[in-house]
Length: 128
Image (cartoon, rainbow, N blue to C red; front, side, top):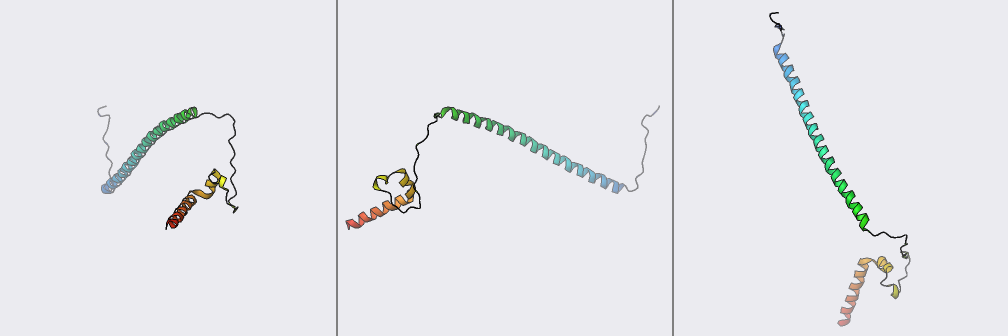
């Protein structure tokens, strides 16, 4: 047992083509490794984002529970009912209801400003 690893030589018919194919397959392997590293980075970012999400979610739950504890609880009391008139009716509200919630909702903020502007213009015309 003079030499345990005998030297064997294999003859290549076209060494340039063999080298070209070997380099091409090495190129493919390197691209696959790059893609694997990219996917590995994406997975690490995903784990970080999921960790941050779980922390934020836990904080939101804690704040929601704190809010529930601080809001006073109502005992099955019914809220007063507000009658909202039909918008299809052409009747004008009476003077006693002029400043009620229903009238404000019916006329709206822009109509109220328009009426105030018209009153001011009438007062200016009366001064002349």
